[in-house]
Length: 254
Ligand code: G
Ligand code: G
Ligand code: MN
Ligand code: NA
Image 1 (cartoon, rainbow, N blue to C red):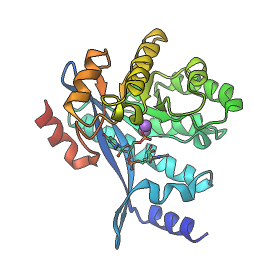
Image 2: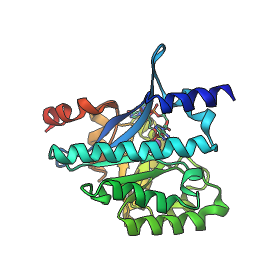
Image 3: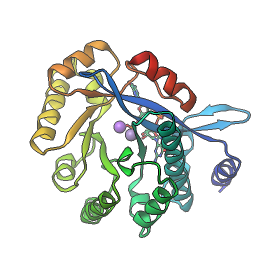
Image 4: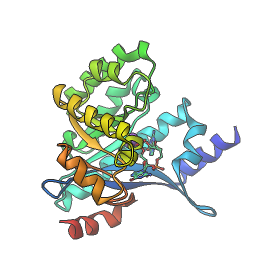
């Protein structure tokens, strides 16, 4: 396949970059972490978003190679930030296909071992509800296994899937990310507001942390804080940015 070959070539040529979007605690005003989001810096076409190339690699071996590159790159960045005195988390998006590779935990351990100066708890893996329900026991065991390595897990896009509550019930994730579609419209639509409030109280009942994504305005932030959701990510705080821009941004935010 032509597109796959082009992506493989780009990977070998070092044309991919990770952008980092801050995650903050709105109560303390502190930056707590960042989500790593892949970009293709194409020599002719410029910056390409993941929607333009990730669909081609879905469920292929190349998706695993790309996923490992993302984890490696995130660890490299964590090591740099560690040196610069910035001890924040980095979250990477992991597909169920990648997580379910038989050697996933072993490969993750090898990658972590390459960066002994990085505390594994600073690496968070974001998984979505895309995995088939029949695999949920397997995924749950994998999360337990990876937890023994020290990494943490987030359940991404929470509420937008078709079996969210089963995932919440059965997956030992550390934090729920409230899907941005609910957050975006919560100030206009009472149904979305009810869902956001419900997810926040569910997360507390289940002893999980919770973060709102898609926080686009200060008004969203204040409402979430009033509902006891103090962690947030979104354009209203900052857009995803290149690694070099992150530390200067943190200094202006603090
Ligand atoms: O970065 P952007 O906001 O355009 O992301 C669009 C989608 O691509 C999101 O669903 C995001 O989770 C996904 N995505 C971004 N980077 C990665 C990555 O490194 N790996 C995977 N699997 N998905 C990613
Ligand atoms: O699926 P996932 O949650 O990983 O996707 C993250 C995507 O959401 C990225 O493409 C990121 O650029 C985008 N994003 C982050 N914050 C906001 C926001 O406040 N509004 C909108 N519309 N998109 C956002
Ligand atoms: Mn994500
Ligand atoms: Na999400």
